[in-house]
Amino acid sequence: MAALFSRKQVLRAIGAFAGTAWLSDAQVPLPEAPATKLSMPGLYPGRVVGVYNPGTLVKGRVQADAIRKSIRKGMAELTDTDGGAKAWKKFFEPDDIVGIKLNPNSPHVYSSPEVLHEIVSGLASAGVPNSNIVVYDRYRQGLLSRNIPSWLPEGVRSSYAAAEFTDDQTGIDGYDPEHYVELPLVNPNLDPRNVAVRRSYAAKFITREVTKLINVPVLKDHQSAGVTLCLKNLSHGLVNNVNRSHATLTANACGTFIPAIVSMPVIRNKTVLHILDGTKGLYHSGPEGDAAFVWEPCMMYFGTDPVAIDHIGMIVIDQQRIKSGLAKVADALPDKYSQFHRQPEHIELAGILGLGVFPEAKINFRGAKL
Image (cartoon, rainbow, N blue to C red; front, side, top):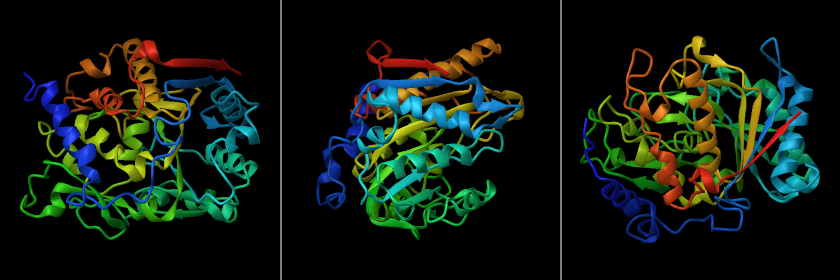
């Protein structure tokens, strides 16, 4: 099917909502999170560290000591330090309130307590007390589905924006009315005259509860976005009214929705570190997935640039898809597992908006093996 909009038209539409228009009083009050040297793409634009450690999984179970070594190595390669306190202090100070955005959504590939505990230990080495750490997912239901509250070290607390998933996602309890993105995307069963259905409001978690965020996605395919890695873990985890981004099989707008949301100042300026957990991966049928498409890369990826990490992550997923006889994400046609026409172009468009480095030739990939 021919494209409905040209690339130029798409970029113009994003810019109208993701650029200077947000800074006018007519759209959104000035953000409380000013840009800093840590704002995306952060301290290391274009740099991606990938650590392969086959010991991270033994008979499908995550191994804490191997995860500790992988994270230490990854932080070392990212920051040109030994990976200990000096690495974490490049991003965090003792008085920071640090959020950790996990991903519990798939029953097959999801965040692990071993990764969380090592991140908390890293923050402790930078002087951040457990009482200043908040573990978050958009839904309380999601946190409970993986029993995440039971993982939390003493003093670490959890937060969520809504109790559970609902078809109508326009309620703003748990969301901040002063921070939103308005886009010409509306769920077809809602009234477009209602301004709330054209907006996605940021969670109070990111606007009011934390000063900095660590983004901890997992390595997954996604049937409408193509992949769900760093960018989508933020765009669809930190705001309400996200179903409008893929309201029907033919009204898929993930390509523009994702970069527009991540460009919000409170998201862009507070998210300072991305740790992509690729110990397990899902290469088809995402986001929840079928167990038949799970594999064990035993990888972890580190960076401050979500665009560069997502580009590398998509390449890794594509390699596994090709190995399994499937087309690359960008070339995949709908099937019984993935019924949308995918839009992995959200990664490139995010790069064009300045959120990171997209061209593969400009990405500085540092691979390490343990």
